[in-house]
Image (tube, rainbow, N blue to C red; front, side):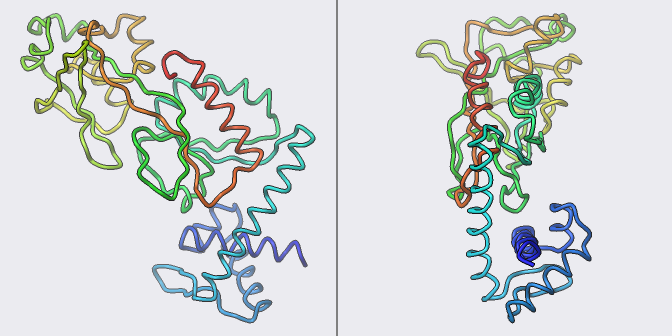
Length: 303
């Protein structure tokens, strides 16, 4: 009975966080009928209505909101207790859901994962890579890498590294393009812009050399909101791109891209590891965050 009650509490908290029975069922990997039965049983056991149900959304009642705060804290304490016990035996275990920008996942985290698996064989990772900024609590995400300043006060931000950029173009583009000797010459070239999917804002690169600086503010010939598509446009010879050095490295080695104005430094973007302020890190999440930040600090492309 106690175990069933805990499962019902988990189901209730997940419904509050995602706003629907279907979303909670998907997140927990159980049928919707199971979730419905758990909530009915929990409400009957407590003798109170916990949720308002409409055709569009599910939200907690006043009693439900108060119960959620206590239940969430209790479940977090229980998870921490179990994780701590496992950690004491050097066996962090369980599932960790993490989100990160595509370049961080593709060029840093994923290639190094065999090392993580060897160290923590009982930790299962759910990894999402993309440019969208997701709501960690609503999506049930334990931690995430975020590029740029973190303005969300509901998140704890831990500095992890830097995403460094460089200006590149394909030899096929440069073969028929005007000469490019100084940043001022960029005005005569086809520049390809990158738009952050989460905000719709265009990335404005800034070139630096000593005390000199130059912003690339000309209207782009094309714009992209996906990192993979953006770098593919540069390799295809469509124009000049400003991309992460980690993404550019293999293309620079193969000759598919050429770095432009190498004596000028393109700015970098801070990378933070974030997690919900209301959640204490379990041993399994801490194992991943410590490993990932140490990995980033040890890589010259990201440190």
